[in-house]
Length: 266
Image 1 (cartoon, rainbow, N blue to C red):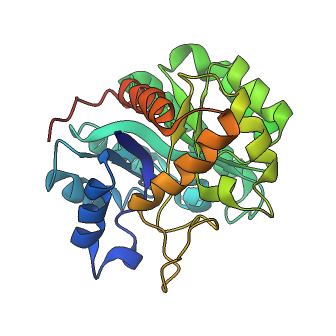
Image 2: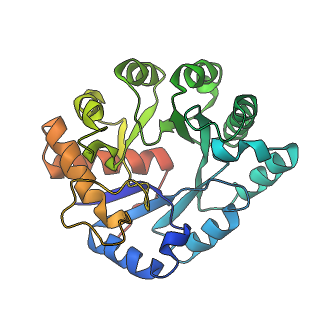
Image 3: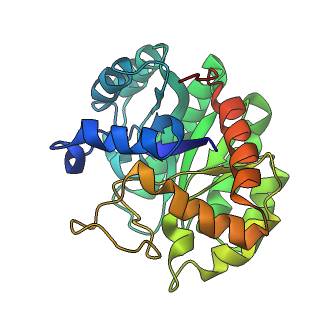
């Protein structure tokens, strides 16, 4: 089996002491490739440097998270256009809307998102989207951009059935994380994941966050890492009544096509 983790925060300080070991465990868990998540313009260069260490296996996004949208400016937009030209960049993001925490004012979140959608459309990149408690607004915005975007994925999907079907109606992809393994808040996603068509579903860990609660034993540091994608996959496969092999085949093919990743041969 071969897996692609489409959302890893590998530059996070939680990995500073053992990043190489984390990667070794990921490769041992049959992860062939990863897409590293960028959440700020300032962080792009660091993530791109990580990708350069393993250019056939590590790729990344380029963009600004809605939490950071208060810092968005025309200068940031210019920098993003340049940073996105790197060979390792495969999508614009993580961008979107977060009306749950509202770390940035909503008008600034919307402005930063629309500017990044414009950049993605200009450069022909898919979009890696963040959404919390903002599906209606996000959908209204995406309606005006979808025809100009090659593809878009709602990363770490946690919304309801109505939002899921509206995303699917816009021909969006859906990213599922260890949230689905949470018996407290993941139950609705367990019921919905079977309704995502093959070819539109991808898997991610969002490491170092969202440690699967089904993992046993859990690491003492409570840190999630890419190797645990198999725990996410087991729950997803069960909910979809698929074998792990079937799930690996179609989610890996979908991720490779979405991000335009080369086939990796170990």
